Length: 187
Image 1 (cartoon, rainbow, N blue to C red):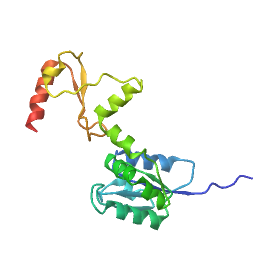
Image 2: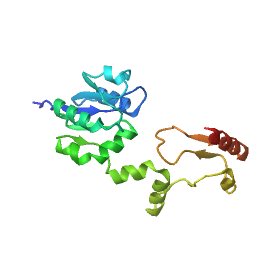
Image 3: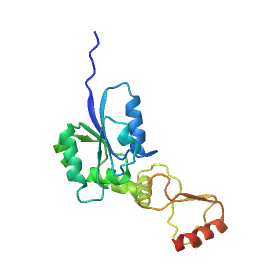
């Protein structure tokens, strides 16, 4: 005789279209394990809010009321596991990890220190090299002149607060790099 698996109550944040949160939601829906899924997002038009049995609007993660509202939802829905779906929410949830645990849920995030270091590409590169983990060459480019020793093509991405592919550029040669810096300085 097979025992029926107990349903786990899961909160997935940031369930907008094509987001990490939405992909987490889709994965949970496809799982053979029984989950009671609750979703949240700051945008009322996020598709994941309408694909879960229970959903809530939350203020943006940097809003002063975010964590109070978040904890209200945890308690009301008896959430056991929290799966953050956006970089800003990972940061806030990691920072308040103990508070969330004290409210009965397990947030699936690294420590705040690890999160902060991983969101700064320069710090992360230094850490990985220090621990003998292979990484692509990483340099800080404050001007095109710093690129003369580099082998093209190169990938350029902001060092901080650029999740996913946001701000990524592939530059084929020094001329493209100069154009990139000219355009970048206008923004």
